[in-house]
Length: 309
Image (cartoon, rainbow, N blue to C red; front, side, top):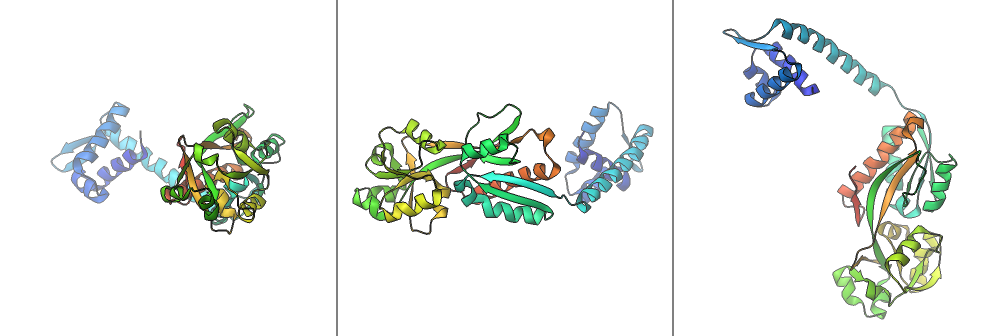
C-alpha cells in the first residue's frame, strides 16, 4: 500500500468521480483507476462503486475513508514536527587530504544550511589513522579507503575513484610524453619513465600503486599532500594521485588518467554501528552522501563514480 494510493482514494471520494479526480491530480483516468484497483486488491475489499450520480464509497470504503483521513492528518503533523524541530549536537568527521580538498568546504556549507545547530569538527588524516580514530571512538564518521574494518562498524562503499598522473607540463615534455597531454591519458609503460614523488609505504595509496605497477621510479617519499604537490613543481617531477590532490596546489598542472589498465580505489563511508549513532551523526552521514552525489553529478569530482547501494 502506497501513500499516493491513499491520496488518490481520498481525491476520488471528495470529487465524486474518477474523471474529476484525475483532472485535479493531473494524471490519466486509466492510471488513477489502476491505482484504485491495486489498492482494493491489496485490501481484498471493494472500496468504490459507480452509480448514476458518480463514484461513491461502499460502506467499507466509507469506513476506510474516515481512517485514512485521520492517518493523513497525523502524517501532516509528523512532517510539521520534523520541520519545526532542529537537530543539535556535536559530530567529528574525518576525511583524507585528497577527499577533503574535493568535498570539505561543500560538506561544511551543506551542513550549515541544513543543520545550523550541529557543531562539526573536521579532521584531516591518512586513511589508516582515521580508521584508528574511529576504532578509538574519537571520530563519529569518516571516509577511508579500506574495507577491513571491525564487523561492528557500519561500512558503505561510497565512491570509486580513478588515479591520475599529476605533473607540470614541462616534465612531460622533457620525457617526450607530449602526446599524453593530447590524449589526456598515460599508460603504465609511460609512467615508468618519470621520476615520481609518492607517499611512503605506510600510505594505502602507495601500496595500491606498487601492487598495480612494478618498478616505478620513486625519487622522494612525502606523506604530507600539500608539500608533495608543491614539490612536484619545484623539483620538476610527477606524482600519481586522485584528481582531488591537484586541488591542494596553486600550480598549473596536467592531469592524465592512468590507463591500460586503469587504477581505481574505493572510498568507504564508515562509522560505528548506526544503533549507536546520535541523530546528529546519522544526519551528517546523509549530508556526506548528498554532497558527494551532487559533486559527481555536476562533474566537479574528476574520475569519480558514485557507488549505488
